[in-house]
Each structure stands twice: as structure tokens, then as C-alpha cells.
Length: 164
Image (cartoon, rainbow, N blue to C red):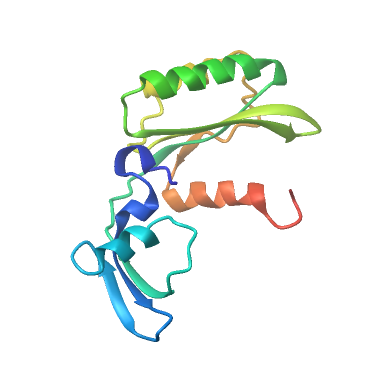
């Protein structure tokens, strides 16, 4: 998954070609035209069909993104889930991405919504349902304009070794 999944699919969908060493030692390419069954099997499957030695991906442009992590008081969780369900069922803006969760932070239970607009629109109507929730803790939220790597670095800090 990525911030771009809504618009471009899963990351494995962007693979154009795998170079694979099979158990026999033979080096083959797997793509839509050559070894197509292996190509499909390698895309996103937890498998052991060979050793992938290289792969080619199609790329997409990455502009400035608006987003970050919004924190909410724990009693907002029900409303956050309702907003998330509404987003999933009704939103058509493919330039938006969200991840809602509940957890523990700042010494207390807390709800979060990681939200992003890929065209950098901080006023995107698709995200207003999350920005207007009561219990929003503005002082801890990290909503801002940045680049893709900046937001990836932020999210990676949530899963550092020894933290979870």
C-alpha cells in the first residue's frame, strides 16, 4: 500500500518485470508477455517461486503533498470510525488517502487519522470530515505540506524496533 494506492493501485501493481533465479538455477524474466503465470504469482504473494534478483517498476510523479497525522481525544473514536466509513463508501477524490486508528500516545488513549492529499490541497473537501471532528488535538497534529519521503519518514517512526 502507499499514499497513491487509491489512484494507482497497490505497489505490486506497478511492477513491469521481475528477473528471477529459479530453483533449477535458470535465470528468467517474468512479465505480462513472458512467464505470465509466474509474473502474476510474484506480484504481492507471500511465495517462494525463486529468488528475485531485480525488478522494474513504472513510476508516477510525486508533487508536494498536504497531510500528516491528526490526533483526537479518545471519546472521538466513534465519530472517527463513522467518518472513515463515510469516506470509504462515498469518497470519489482519488488524490486522498487516509488511515484511521486508535492506540496509546502522550500518556493516554488516543485516536489518529493519517490523512494526505496528493495534490497538496489542504482545503480538500474529502478531508474536511476528519479535520472538523470534535476532540481534534491541534497542538500534537502534524498536518502540513511536504514531500513523499518526509511523510514516509514520519510514519516509519511509529514502527521503530523496540517501540511496539
